[in-house]
Picture 1 (cartoon, protein in one colour):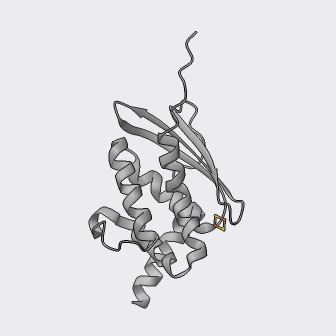
Picture 2 (cartoon, protein in one colour; picture 1 turned 180 degrees about the horizontal axis):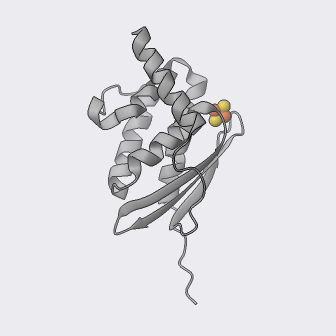
Length: 149
Ligand code: FES
């Protein structure tokens, strides 16, 4: 188990120090900003969705390494899948992180995000890990109105 924990730590460190898809999308169709009420940290997500597919996604996190790593892995996970698949995955992952259900996602489906499950031992950090997923779901419910000129 120690080797596995080291591997999970390495995944989190890698994503928090070199976050993938960091920034803002200029041509976003959906976006939102959320904050963690316990620490005040903020996280913004912007997406480009067309034909019900998440074509592109970026995030910006002003927060801890867990929220940054979770946001980075989230962008890799949902880019290219449908909105409903992304929401379903998000809900299952959050249930697993909140400990209410443990085997909602199999090993292949959860992928590197399995590294986040270690935070279940630290209830205060669960919100850090779920923050990007909360933002994702909220953004997908917040389409940006089209400007017609
Ligand atoms: Fe603020 Fe983790 S401590 S998001």
